[in-house]
Image 1: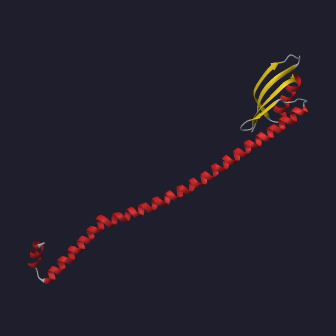
Image 2: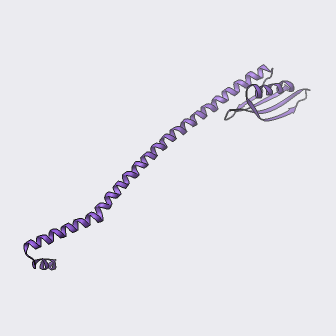
Image 3: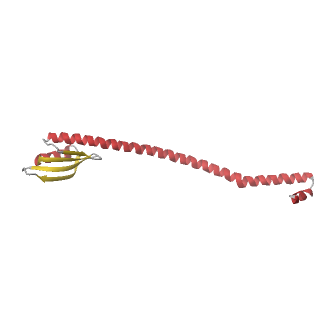
Length: 162
């Protein structure tokens, strides 16, 4: 520090003031260029990043709401399909003079039906009606003959189309 004062003492007051003001100006310029300008640029960049992240978050919220609604609709439709298929199976069985011995609703509009000791011809007519009149697919069918001629026991897995 003494060296600085001795170097400044060589100059008169006016020159000393000019040198100190110039040094202060250079110091402030270096502070601005080395610290404050990069911080300002970083802040502006962070503002842009935050805005784009907020926009992405809003898009995600909208997509999440759509996904939840679609899941709820599909659950509601699946439960509605189970109710629809069970009513349809019951009414079509009665229309064909058949009686089911077991019914098990499944997911996505599917159901399992068990028929014990029913007429083969009546069951085939019932299956035909389901497929061609009510748009129901037969996913799985297993039949076994009974001791009575013309009668069968059947396990059927049905699914509503569409």
